[in-house]
Image (cartoon, rainbow, N blue to C red):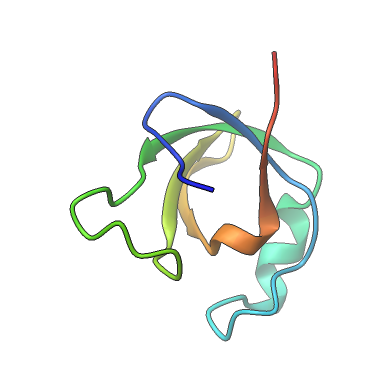
Length: 70
């Protein structure tokens, strides 16, 4: 699945990616907006930059993100 700037996402689970750190568990269940999907690479393994409501902007592996409607 390709992510695009401006899409709303949920961090819905822990990632299996090596870039996932224990401190990132606090973001599970939070919603945010994609600010940098790294479309120039279009690499499915690339990290996605997400602006999380009230928590700032962070980079997440794609396997922990899912699109939400609202």
